[in-house]
Structure formats: structure tokens, C-alpha cells
Image 1 (cartoon, helix red, strand yellow):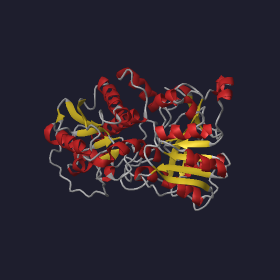
Image 2 (cartoon, one colour; image 1 turned 135 degrees about the horizontal axis):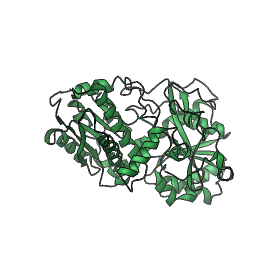
Image 3 (cartoon, one colour; image 1 turned 30 degrees about the vertical axis):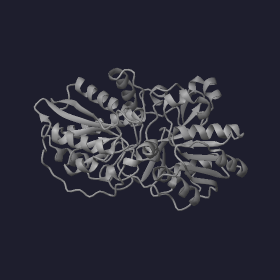
Image 4 (spheres, one colour; image 1 turned 135 degrees about the vertical axis):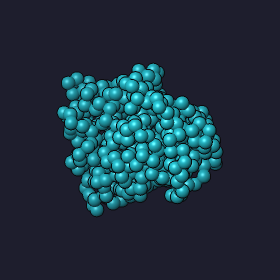
Amino acid sequence: MSTSRALMALLAVVVVAAGMAACGNVTTTTSTAGNTDGVFPHKIVLGGLASLTGPLPADFAPAFAGVRAYLDMVNAEGGVNGRRLDFAYPLDDQSSPTVDASQARALVDQYHVFAVVGVATPSFSGASFLASHDVPTFGYDVNPNSQWLAGPSLFGSTGSYTDFTAPQLQAVYLAEKHHVKSAAVLAYDISESQQGCEGVVNGFHRYGIPIAVEDMSIPAPATNLYSDVARMRAAGVGMVVSCLDVGGNVLLSDTMHQEGMSGVTQLWFDGYDQRDLEQFPVAMDGVYFLLQQVPFEVAKLDPGVYPGMDEFVSMLQRYEPGSLPSVAALAGWTSAALFVKGLRLIGHDVTRTRLVAALNRITDFTADGVMPPVDWRTGHDRVNGPTNCSAFVQVQGDRFVPVYGTPPSVLSCFPVPPPAKGPIARVVPLPAGVPPLGTRGSSQAGEPTTTKSATARPSDARAVSGA
């Protein structure tokens, strides 16, 4: 799991923390009863579990749009081995841990679904129950705890495991690119936010980026950041990494601008959303974001280079008109894509145990070039290796612009485990399987551009409106 996905759950944690139970590395006893539940001669019945109501439906509900778009596309092509994929039970957990657990039970005991293809919630309390019943479960793994580690039948959208303590090389890379002399790292006073920045702090310490201001105890939600900004200004901070939510990030940026710190490099782990950019264009201008996916913008920048992203944008528009590309919608799409890939691998004899076994033999799942490859032989219990690949985007005016990258890819890859010492401003060569897959170079790979140069040189168009 990435830092950015961990931070996506942050605000939800703030508003539902009182109801969330701490979850250790869950050990479950697995039952294979119901191994063929939901499997019929001409259809397979599926369910989903997302926060459609409650504090943050806009952050989680779009996952169902991604699931439906992918399954509708597959069904329009005849389904899988003659069976239509029936997303019959997309249930709402109301952002409540208690409701989540009861709805997970209902999917299995009441509705007898074959698989849960679409989980998107800040409170996935039903994880251990689904794992104990060997139910193939796929979803948006935003939770920075061990809920997705409950068993080998749970498949997070880009891998189910993260190591928050490992030095975060991407932030160091950006600091070195910008010749940062001192940095600031800000987080809320809750573990989910602090964990999100722990790897950044460790990376800065290991590779010699001085941290002049480190505040990991900001009350959530943020209401006044003047004290931190004043300290940053006095220390001559050249870069700030924020593990706050969008509201906190906007407040931070506004306060920095008020205090004459508009030239500071900012890296946010929450806010890569066209809706946020339209609402906060001034605060977000120049900000960098780190993605565990190919940016949505490549569908217009480089049509045909990343076919999975082209297909996602096109099918979302066709089958879910009015839905915008989002991280949650893409997580739903890739979850459905992984499920369908497993079905095609096992053929007509469809059982839960056969599907889970087939999926856990996949070594390089990318959803047709949407994200770096996931090796599901190890994706449940350790970080993907030997590299960790990400994409950088920067806000330039009213657009998210992919920057850096390693030709021919928009992605930049870093070694796993991290090197013992720096500098690390040079990324490792692209390993096999990293998108683009068997295609020519991407126009946006390389050094960042400015809005002016992108506008002046349409042949090198790196700044396009969000998909």
C-alpha cells in the first residue's frame, strides 16, 4: 500500500475514529464452505461493500462506478466463459465499522455471493470474516493497518502490504532535484497521518536532507497552521511534505502564501482530484503529488501508449456517464480486472479456492498498463520488489501535469530495499513489466515543464486538462 492511499483514509479516520477497532496482523481459520456459492450456468453473482453514505462518500463511492464500468465492458463482450458477471449486491456500510462487519456477513450468509469485487471504506471491519470464509475479495486498500492482511483471499488494489518505516525515496528524490537545504514534515496527531510521514522522515534523515520543522502532532482537522509556517519561514525551509488531508493542505498552502513562502516546493499525499483543483486552484498551483498509478492525464497526452488507462477513461464515460476519473474509481476498475483475469485463468470449473490459488500465482499484474506490476506471490506479506515505481504529477495552472519519469515510462522506479546512503537523485532502470508495455516512448517523461513552455510548444504538450 502506498503513502498516498494511506492518507486517503485520513479524514475518514478523523470522523469515525471512535468506532474503529485496532486490528493486528489477523490470523484466521479458513472455511471453504460455500466454495461455489453464486456460480450458475450462465452467471456469477458478485457483491461490493463501500461507504456510499456517511462522512466521505465522495472519496469511496466512486469505486463502484469503476467496478460496474469494467464488468459492463466484459459482459458486453459475452462475459467470461459464457457466464455474465452480475454485480447484484453493492452494499453500503455507511462509513461505520459495525455496519461494515454486518454487511460483509450479509454478502456471504444472506446473498451468497461468489466474490466481493469492490471494497471501498475507511473501516473494513468485515475483512477477517471474508478471509475466514475464503471469499475472494478485491478493493481499495486505503487503510493503513492490517485489515487487508487477514488472509490470502484479500486483494488490495495495488498490493495489500506496506512498510511505513522504510525510507521514502520519492520524497528524497524530489528534494534532491530541487536542491533543498532544509525541509518541513507535517502530520496530524493520529497514527494514520503519522505513519504516512514516517517513511519521509526516515528517508530525509538517512540521505542527509535536514528537517528544520517536524510537527507530527497537529490537531485534526487543521484550523490554524501559522505557528508551523512561521517556524518554516524563520528556518528558510525549501520544501514541505504534508501528510494532512486536502483541507489541511489547502490551509497550509494559503498560510504559506500569506507569509511570503510561495516559492517553497510542496509535496502532498492527498488532493490528486480534478474537483479539488477546480475548487482550490491558487493553493494547489505548483504542488507535487505522488501516485502509485499511471496518471489519468496520459489518456490524452499519449493515447495508445497506456491502453489500460485509455480503456478506463473511455469505459467510465460510456457506462458511468457523469463519473470523473478518480483514484477510487480506478481502484474499483483494477479490482474487477484482477477478478476477471483470475476467472479466465481457471476456466469453466469456478470455485473460490481455485480462483484464489490462481490469483496468488500472478507475478506481474498491471491491469493492462494502469499501474506498476504487482507480484501476488508476495503481495500479501511483503513489499513488492526489487523496485518501487511511482509517478509524479505537478499542478501547473488548472492542470495536473506528469513530470520526471524514466523514458519510455511516466513512472520512476526506486530500489527495494533502499540503498544504504545517498544521493539518490538518479532512479534505477525500468524493470520488466513496468508500463508502457511494448510501446514507444511517452511524451511527458523527463524533467518538469512549466505552464508557459507547455503552452508555447504544443508538440511537447505536457499540460492537458484532466481526463
